[in-house]
Amino acid sequence: MSGSGQRPPKFPLALDRLAPVVRTARAATLRPQRPVHEAAADAQRRAAPTGLGLDSAGVRERMVARLRADGLRSEAVLAALASVPRHAFVDTALIAQAYEDTSLPIGLGQTISKPSVVGRMIELLLAAPGRAPGRLGRVLEVGTGCGYQAALLSQLGDQVVSIERLKPLHDKARTLLAPLRRNNLRLVYGDGRVGHPPNAPYDSIIAAAGGGDLPAAWLEQLAVGGRLVAPMQAAGGRGQVLMVVDRTESEWIRKVHEAVHFVPLKSGVA
Image 1 (cartoon, rainbow, N blue to C red):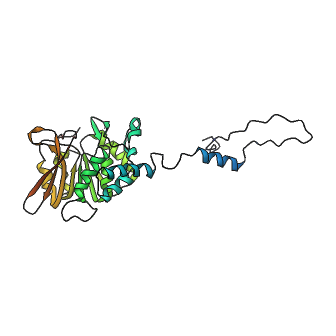
Image 2: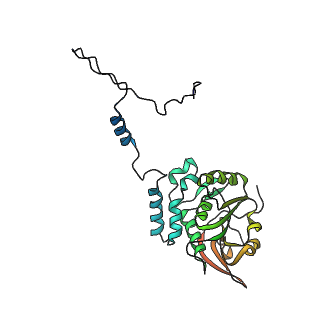
Image 3: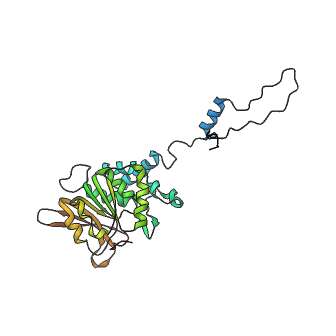
């Protein structure tokens, strides 16, 4: 801004080439600017076609259509995936892959999970017996990462607490989630293995890292009637599987689902 306090034009005004001087009895009119209708027409021609920008709903809808074709059935999950801009949570160098069904590095040895895996885990949470259709209730997420899954959970949960043990990722997620203005989402910097007792019990617990066991704190903080979905080492140490745990009045019922691959679950903060 200049010292006069006036703002410079947002876009420089381009001058036409001056036509050769024609020596006639009547001089041609010189136009320092192009006619408004011509400028508007040019601007319209330069505009990106609808649906091709990464910030368009069309791009997300195409991702959702592929996930539906591949077997994701929950309309509530599909709607959340269609509304959250995944490209906003992906590093700039990888942004062209934001809507592919692939995991991508987010730094510090961590990844943003494949949309199909995120969708499947949330779908399993929603399928808990007796659950209100399309609602997760009070949610605990272990492993905020860049914040993408937290954004999805906040679409479906009444209250969401997301905990991250790596301070740079916690700070990154806070920055990336701020524009979405999710008032029902709270980010916590801490050790995910101990859960977050102040807001327990939780109707839904979901983890983005897997170990050889499910921490006792998670099971204790799961509400009666609640469901936990987390990766866990398969029997015999052969990779990881999704473990689903339902809590009843008297027990925790475990069921093994499909194979997955997540980063290791670790203790402490860093």
